[in-house]
Image (cartoon, rainbow, N blue to C red; front, side, top):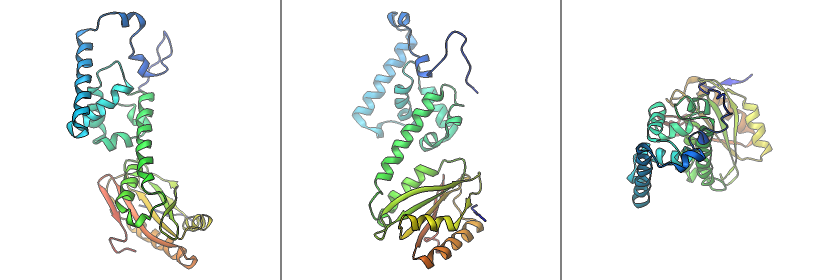
Length: 261
């Protein structure tokens, strides 16, 4: 038995809309015409924003301006400032924007499927970069990098997920796997499957990680009991559970730091 852890798209009659980025592109006829005052305004604004970023880096721009600068590429023929501000208003932070699922991103006016997928692609690149800082290195001495990666990967998930980080004898990361997804407040966890997978990978240790979509990383009694069961199952087979980390939007909790392990 498992243990528990705590349309807006409209069809166009004239022609199919394959990509909303193309929808905002000028037609051949319009391209020959002189730009309107509105077009001239946002083109000038884009150039000024690019210059500020080039000269001062990201510190010279607010979060909405960084997002707006990115959206220039994704939506080339539209003022993207309102879209950037709407995304931040809806999801709170840049992390919230990039962590949001596609279906919620597309609920924001001006964001269609292609732009939403592009935003998720950028989020995936960022996660891969953070993960690359861990691979093959002793995880216990790269703790901040580990937390940064787990937060980027899990903090904004709308469902709980249970992740396993398998380590070798040097405590270097050899595998990062999501064992299962659950609902908004629990995930089924199978202690024997955790240990079985560790043996398959010849892992000497494991770090348990799961998220709390509520944002509060405080462990529940179910989280504590489940952790103890996994430790008791793994220990006779020589597998150490180094920690159980709970990730929330508002931070994280380490069972070892709380002396629960």
